[in-house]
Image 1 (cartoon, rainbow, N blue to C red):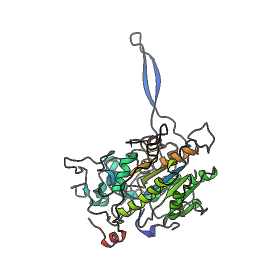
Image 2: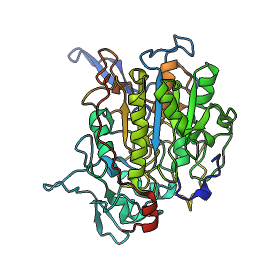
Image 3: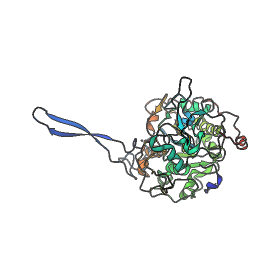
Image 4: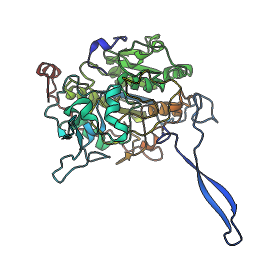
Length: 446
């Protein structure tokens, strides 16, 4: 999300690498008496699931197919790539290191001089840099070479933090299932990616700053939850994700202040589906914020879920809306386009592209008593995997082609045995020294 308040005009399995492939057998007949019959394998793409399709077409919509889970919580933070936060964690597909443990990754600057990945000198971030805008993201991608980050955003794009800098997040990502193929939903900014989270599509949006819009043709996940009497809330600090769409704001009982989250978590009365939003000016971890402030907020949110009486039936997803302009070494693969709405761009001056490719990887961990121990998910996920999990639990119709064909995150969970984390694990504390005001006053530079 943009660091400029003026942009906020709101109320204060994708089938892996595209549509995937299936294997079919085709008899080619006899080649002659000495050759015999030749049977060859032919790669046949399965027909993609369509909007409106049910995860289980043999059951009525609204059927609860995952009774082990009663509460799905989404904590989506802001603007960091996998390598930027978890690249030197030592778990998952991180940065390649030399013998001294220093990352080898480089990107050339405008003059062709390589800029090597480096540890950030402070948890304060540089104002307005790096950039995750449509053009900057596509320049960074550079047709799959991932070598345009410095050209797009300057050398700060190659900065990263270590487990010593982010102890709570490091503990979270080494305890619960880490998804190292979780991509943002498109190569663009916060608002388009958060639209994917609730609508399965960006509906043409490529930038921040748009006011709340009408719902796209397939509706919002909130609409389908309402239609089947399933409870949901968007707990927000200063801006609700639900505010990206006008219809989601019509019932104020669904969009409530953040304090209520901690009350509901402590009482065991969280709804079926929750989105928890930080204060986007102080706690979201977008530049120029002190990332420790956001880490403290996230530790409180996750701790409240783990310590509450409903923990035994909870799944919480911690992730980031997009990469924030920070380097990641894994090129985003092709994705199934959500619908026929093109991005609102003009080429030139805009970089060409569409919604048929994921954005860069972001940190993502699945937190639950049913989480698999010692598990790193290599399955391709994006934000619509959250939609698919919700749709799978309650057998709800898909909103778009993207969520219809997304993976549902169930590879990270094990319902066949006693929950591995029924007793919540003890995670490291988030640093208590965070000072957002000091970051703003100091105006970090590189």
